[in-house]
Length: 127
Image (tube, rainbow, N blue to C red; front, side, top):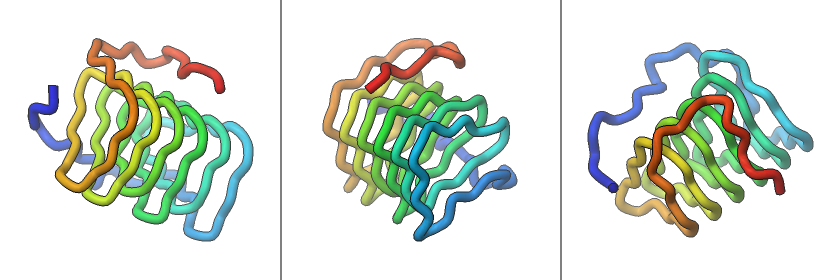
C-alpha cells in the first residue's frame, strides 16, 4: 500500500496559478490544467484536472478533487486524486482516495485511505 513506485514529479511543470504566502482565499476554487501551487490559505474546496502543490506554509481547509497532489504543508479535508504524495513535515487530516500513495517519513496522516482506480471528475464528498 505504501510502496514507493515512481515519485510524482510536478516540479518539471510550469506553475500556471500561484496563491502566495499571506493570501487567504475563502470559497471554492477550480484549478486549470497544468500546475497550481498554494503557499497561502484556502478555506473551501479545490478541484480541477491539473496538478496541485501545497507548499510548506500552504493550508487547505476543505476537500480536494484533483488529478495529482504533492503536499509539503497542511490539508484538513478529504482528498480524491489519482496520485498523492505527502512530503516530510506535511500533515493531512482527512480521508484519501487514490490509486498511488507515497508517504515520506516525518509526514503526519490522520484518516482512512481507500486505494482504488480514481477517475478524474469524481466529486469529493461535500462538507
